[in-house]
Length: 181
Image (cartoon, rainbow, N blue to C red; front, top):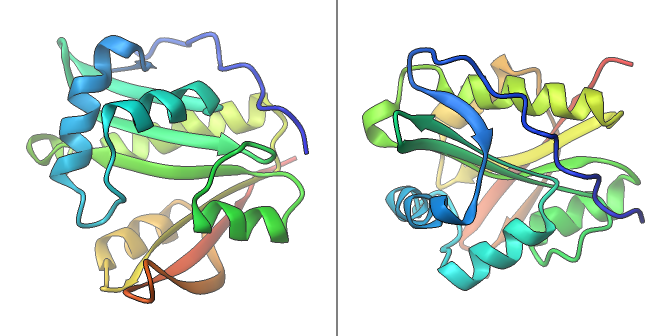
């Protein structure tokens, strides 16, 4: 197990439709919590203390800043991180090195603008810069999330496992994307 790499110094994105991708800061936490609450039916709940703790151990935590409003965020962890997610732990038992996407959220007002794809492109560049061979994540199968299934297929992910979580209330598809050498 290795320590998480330093966060990318912040290759600031260009001001394009939907905003600029930049590192998340504590000043963004209220907006991140609001976005998480907007999509909590697909995610685990998050409060300020938990967000602060996760931010502190994240390898990658970036936002899309649309003229001062947070339109989207992505939070990811390296292997060896003290993270208690059952999905993260599944990957930790199956792979020695990886970058785990814990959550990606795009505000309802910004959906359909390609912000999720832009964040994934930025994350993939971070993975390559950090010499991380695998990016992993999961999405819901039961209850179904077909939009996420289509999105992850377009991003080059493939299923490597399934598991029931949340006291057997949710089945997830565990996904992997191998990064080019």
